Amino acid sequence: MELIRSWLRRTFNDPQIAAFIVLMVLGLGALLMLGSVLAPVIAAVVIAYLLEGVVRAFERFGVPRLLAVVVVILFLTTFLILVLFALIPLLYRQVGQLVDQLPAILAQGQMLLLQLPEQYPQLFSEAQIREMLDTARREITDLGQRVVASVTVQSLMILGTLVIYAVLVPFLVFFLLKDKRLLLQWVSNHMPRHRAFASEVWLDVDQQIGNYVRGKFIEILIVWAVTYITFSLLGLPFAMLLAVATGLSVIIPYIGAFVMTVPVALIAYFHFGVSQELVYVLAAYTIIQVLDGNVLVPLLFSEVVNLHPVAIIVSILVFGGIWGFWGIFFAIPLATFIQAIIKAWVRRRKPPDDESMGVEEELTP
Image (cartoon, rainbow, N blue to C red):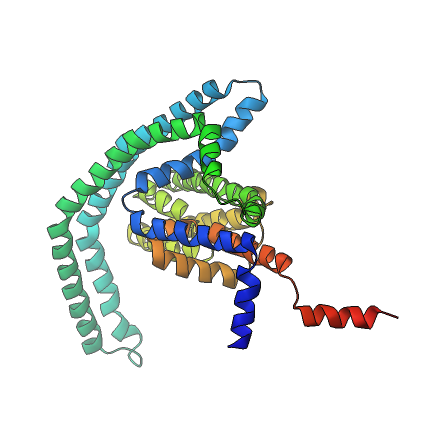
């Protein structure tokens, strides 16, 4: 208890650290309680933060800030319209085609499984295979009924949410970029007076988080485009659906690429069978993943602080469990933020008086 009391005294006697803790608690509480309500505002703040680098690039070439913001917003609006009216309907059609082909795929898989007792009688029996197939058939039937029961309502809700985001977010991003200085001044006027520690932490992670999120977005687009072109040239069905999933899989380091191997290999196998085309698809997918991990990632994230793989996986599990998809997407920036807090805390922490006195006595002749 004395150790805990001593730590609390050293921590909260420093007004900088106390103010930072209060800001963190209030911000986290507001995010947890109002996150779903303020989701468009949070998305607009994140997008404006990402696009700030593009606006500054225009300003360095002598373009007025208002004109630069207008150009960037036009590009953002065009991208959102393409996603809403071109990409999503295409993905919806390919998902429907995949669902229509599921019975044939399952029948082919059933035939392959029934051959296992003949090929490996010491490992599998026909009764075990049939029991496994009956269980899988029941589970798939129940899943299909649940999906059919909820698909209409969920589709309407998702469509409404996308329309709201497509209309509201660009307006919010425009005003956040245009009035950035005024908004930052207003926030600064309402911040605690003792905020040097918070400013130190923010300056330490600002460039790293910005580079990571911008680089991750560029990585998703490049992997998505390259995968779609490759699968289309190889004649693989559902090329766009697999390409989008492969692009999004880079959000989860190490795990995403491995997980996406299964659907790519299964669809290629059921379409091409055991043939050269199957080998070409798997080889192309492997090459894309190797180039992404060994060429693209080092180029895009050269300025980002390296985290240990264990820290990355733990951060993905923790933040993904709390905030779902967005928690997974921002897991590494949040882990970098926590790492910066720990470093700044250690730098600012003062040794106890008795330890400092002991050092002075030893150094005194």
